[in-house]
Image (cartoon, rainbow, N blue to C red):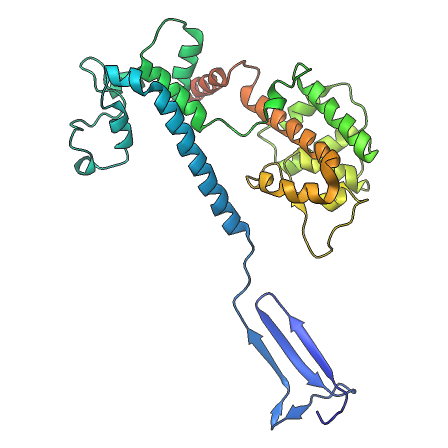
Length: 332
């Protein structure tokens, strides 16, 4: 530019950059017979979310295979004594008939006994929860294959709840005890205090209501506690407890974070555990205990919404099945 001063203006987007060169009076400059302005387009950058989800899925699948292998090894000898090709039928259940192993001569997958077939099994146990409920309530000996199906189902669908939330050591594991532990951890580490309430059933009732959105739950909890929107930190904790996205920088405003980096967590997100090391690095293990106690509250409320007062998940699921069955009869 022959030593002259000039301005370079940039308009940067997620998939393009616009540029222009002007003199000190903002007149567009030219060089080699061309106006010095233009645009460059490129492929938009992608976040690591997709890669992380695939990584989590692979890891969970691998863990599932290991758990299934361990359970199968425990039952293999007993089941083989009564049904030598039971596991072969299960492994081949995903194939078309022509693609199955030669030893498979039937369309039955679970049971192929002379007097007990798949149809008999599903008539007796419409869902796996009916089987699990039967094994809980009836102490009489059952076919080892039935026991295996119930156990493997519990291993495959074990849920994501923290054990401490179900039977916390040193407490009865009730919701009010768990919520008080969260409030204590919050006060000890952040000096924040949740307003006292006397009816914890109302809290868990709001948090476990499947008919309400997570946003609506957070609004009702804020009203219950008498917390105004101006108190952004406590509002953010309420959002966290309701499974909404929470900004860690607002949860712990006294700590420094990189300005251009997002530090958010969601109890409802499968990648929550992947973010724990990064969060601890910024706020420390003592402060992370607050988030961990909040997770126990969230899990317990979610569990109460599923259990609906029953002692076992199987009882709750069977009751839900029977209600749905009765509702369908009313419609027909």
